[in-house]
Length: 284
Ligand SMILES: NC(=O)c1ccc[n+]([C@@H]2O[C@H](COP(=O)([O-])OP(=O)(O)OC[C@H]3O[C@@H](n4cnc5c(N)ncnc54)[C@H](O)[C@@H]3O)[C@@H](O)[C@H]2O)c1
Image (cartoon, rainbow, N blue to C red; front, side):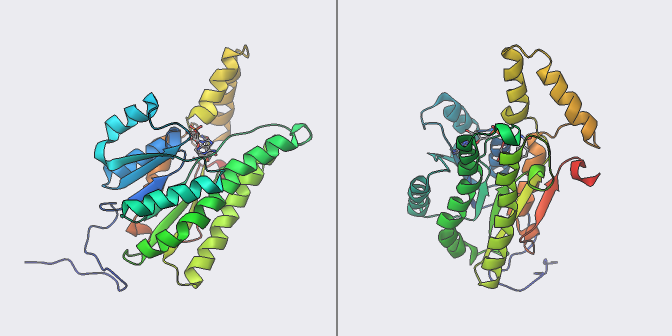
């Protein structure tokens, strides 16, 4: 009988196949929205138990519907990422459940567009509170538990922060959003270096999507149409398709593919990396 040969050293050597999430525990923030939901469902399909978290109450019909589809692989928890207290409570719940935490996807976010001179300080604070503070609290609160879980995994645990192409390149009327996402890109690198050099078995990487078909983009444009801006949706889609080398928006599942890879042992040597999934937006 031919037996697969273990490829590398380290703790808990496993045989092929790598790359699936069997037996992993993941937590996804903003898991009810477009990208977060696609990531949650993809992780569950690869065998993970997924803590889906978002702003909705547990008995909200949207949560019930998702639980119906994901079944036993899903746990739901209300988690406002901008509250450190909420993160502390979430950490306690995950720890008490006893399965550890292998993968943390810091995905929750809000969009915002306005010229620099027309961005109220209160809006700036709100964008930073969700998009940047939320990522900081998540890393800070969950790292001790994830460091414990990572000791038993090839490549350790995995934190994935969802930034944006707007955390890499400039764009008009996005000063607050771009600041929040640029911060996430470098918080990722800083913590990746800190954990790796400090012997903490957690990889930290960021994903930078281009424009994705979700409530944040298409949904917001549809809302403007409903408010009387008749061409808002067509104008938005025309702008994005003309500006993107691949000539289309992304589907949420295409971002979930990148998140599945970064969570898996296939990415065991990746930390501090920026995975750009943008149809070529930043390439020209
Ligand atoms: N859609 C895009 O084109 C695009 C592009 C690049 C990056 N992103 C980023 O991807 C992530 C997901 O966005 P999406 O497109 O799926 O948007 P979405 O609006 O469909 O989902 C965002 C989710 O985050 C949740 N959320 C908002 N504030 C929260 C808070 N304080 N605590 C917990 N949850 C909160 C919302 O309830 C929602 O379910 C965001 O960080 C966004 O900035 C999106």
